[in-house]
Length: 298
Image (cartoon, rainbow, N blue to C red; front, side, top):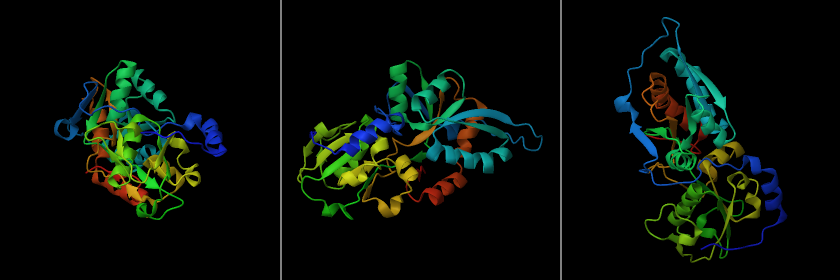
């Protein structure tokens, strides 16, 4: 169920100014076993990594990323791991998900690192080309529930206003966190769930769907907000201290991974890149830098 409510002018002002930025780490969703997606556990099939550091020759690769956190994680790999592995990484930063995948389709970049598998599947269907995602994934930008008004979910009052992302997959994720927190109950086995799938709402909370980029700026205007990890990081919030509830990494369907065109998944450069991003040093970097706002996938 979804409520129609009045919001103050701040929502409309921010919606107008942040339209170009209103892309979310994870857009439209479909089940992970969708035929449009092609995934594998590359650890078992990766070609051996050849160390070219002694000869000075390096394999060059262009990788598209979003600035935070994927760009920062890949920058760590470039500075700390790539040279020894004989890989020369050129990082190409996009603020727009469509441009990132278009660049991949057109061969401008060799791989990208910004999207999760449900987003890839949906994008592949809509734009009629096949991509390939490596699993296990690299990191999760967990959805957290944040508030400027409450210190605990237990304190939330009747008819509280709750904002969630307006894209399909992130709306589902936020609703699942709200369900796990006891505020709502959803129809069982629905993926992706939307507000119309709420079957129990004891506190009659009111759901407002907004673009992800508005979640932090409009936080003072709502009682609770479901926010994805990329916006949390950019806002300087600390998930371990500030989140009232948090998505678990135990079922990382929405975790971000390396994606390339179908047919290029055996490219030794991409295999090498994936192996570096799965390195234990990268996992520790993610833990140390993001303090729970980004979670490495085991």
